[in-house]
Length: 170
Image 1 (spheres, rainbow, N blue to C red):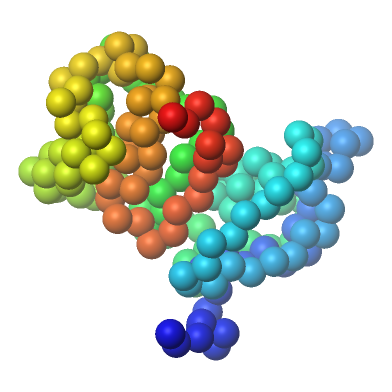
Image 2: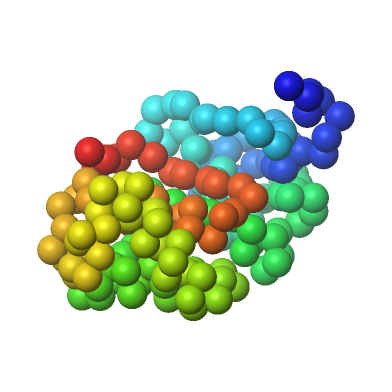
């Protein structure tokens, strides 16, 4: 297998810090993630893991330091190449989840027909194809988590970022 040591990192975090008032959530954090790597941040509640992910995605801005994602600062084109599964899940509870999946994929630039086909393929792989027309509110928490994961990867992102990946998963 070829080495990725010389490749440009897909995530580069350089001396990043973030405070909320007097509470220092992240302090001078530096790391890189290269293509093909699986990278995990482990630590207790309040250690700054979610804050760091939100800074990488430009949901929050660091107080100091710099972050590059997929070759540069985050912008809409780079954001569309990312699949993000947040800790706080946000599914439309009254929607049929197949419709919601297609809609969310179109927001990432996927054509409607291709989005529908890809959604059904993913649901089949997850054992949920027969439930595709159910409303999100009719699914168990574990099934909702599977749908949320499918939404995260259905546009074939170059980078997948998952916060609390095993919360509620069957």
